Image (cartoon, rainbow, N blue to C red; front, side, top):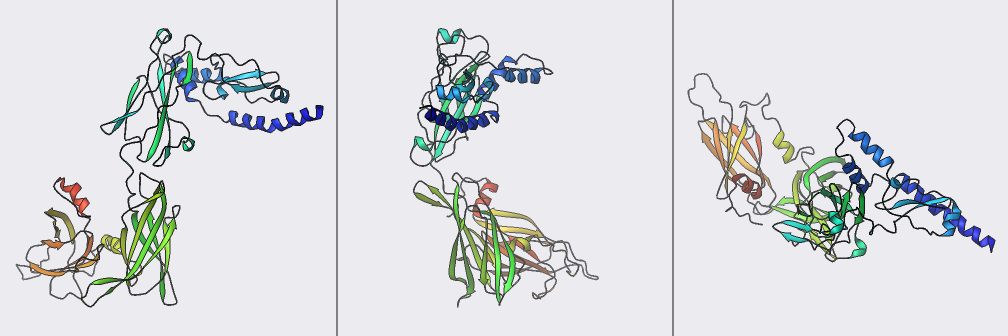
Length: 465
């Protein structure tokens, strides 16, 4: 019989040491920190930090430790704590023979002089904010509490269309306040279920946290994730007459966590009518941790249309973003519309210098770009004639018509017209009609309709999806 008892004691020791390690690395408990802040609230600026440190190191929580404990634990003689500050919440470091362990006091709810235990009300959503209220413990016990009282509001949540208590995460501190009603705006995310609890703390201590509130979820459900941001193509290598590239992107900010990405690519060739058509759309799935993909076996001297889509999971359903898109020409190997747009246009071999975009103007979905350049003053000429030429390089919408237009002007500025959303154009200003060797060059990228809606601030603008 004695042998059996010894085996039980030895088996209990590893658990005890595990608790010891847990308590020694325990960070400052918000309940104890708030109590010490209230104790030291009137201390001077020079002594406040020292006051708080002393308060934490000498903390003595209210309440009485339980008198009985498992005799096997007592026989293990393991100290899981040595002071109250090493125990969670309202727990005290209680001695049991040669052992010590964190326990809840047996009389905490009956002790006089502590703030009453709050009671949570059901959260309510009003005007894009969530109102959370709780009782302040009205009654003799509440009125008998001297000094200030602060409330600590915490939340726990889980993601999903249905509430499941077993899936709730850890409690997180939201705020510390002296009020019994707060309004949370832009703090709760769609698609989550929340519970709240609150604790009342004074310089004398606390009775702990209230029972959790009823579960709550925002009325507005989660939106599909945004498309990936900042698509970029990096040439990797050429092998056996084919090209390998790396397509990179940035993870978008979303209501829902990203589950994975889907990448599409297709070669664009000109059809009988001169329009660009896709040939054999390929696709590949990329894990959420990866924000790039290597695409191999591309044909040289070809234009490729690359797209990336964000996919999130909500319950058993999937939400997909719109596709972010970019063109890449394997002829250049190193240049793409983004890089071309930033290229310096004032090269030494150009006859016309300083070609730049001044502004984009929008009127009833008609887009114009005002450009200007440095005037040229040939000897013996009073007037200058400039030949303006612009044509479409690429468009995100494959249905868009590729345009090529020309005009003449005697001014050193011009308004480019008949531009389309999400298209890239090359613009040349020449002193002659020769288009093969232009005197200047500018790459113009026209943003989408949403960009102009924000800039123009016109509520009547409607962007077609």
